[in-house]
Image (cartoon, rainbow, N blue to C red; front, side, top):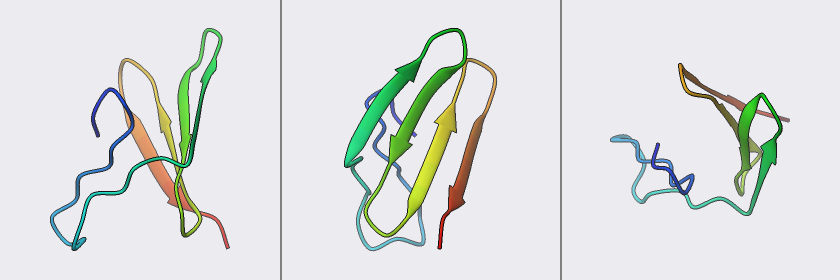
Length: 52
């Protein structure tokens, strides 16, 4: 995961660039990707999930 929200994964044919990004004050950043992927990023960890 880069600072701009580009999700780099070895098992993807290409990197995922966010369709939408926002800052959550005091909580970090949220990135939304095509295909239902969502990433929550703060200074300590990154959590990535997929919404159906």
